[in-house]
Length: 119
Image 1 (tube, rainbow, N blue to C red):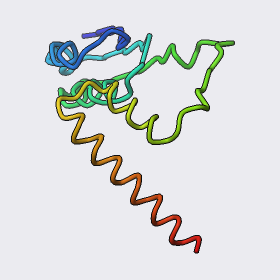
Image 2: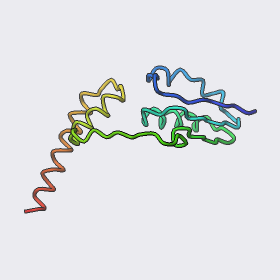
Image 3: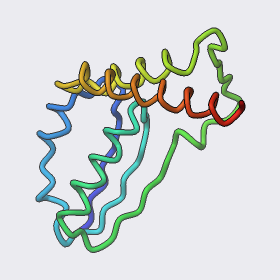
Image 4: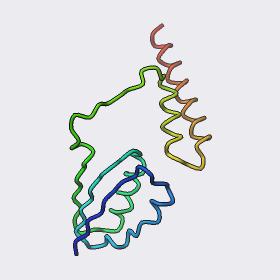
């Protein structure tokens, strides 16, 4: 009737995500405890798969937000395109090259449009 599931995608692959027994969540009261979420796409995919199995109720406890006094570092030396490419590479997709090409073209198109508006 009740299931507690600890979500931690720090060392998770797409294969690990697909090997979770989502059928066990059907008609159950599910409590998800998020310990680490390093890949937002994985978390979204996990939650989509979970909700597709019609649980009775889902509650989510996000321990990541509860951590206090944690230093956040931002690499200000990276440009927007590099950040996009790094993000896509971290998704571990089979067609990452196509997606990187598409995002690069889209990024350059947006830059060109912005520059045309400014003149």
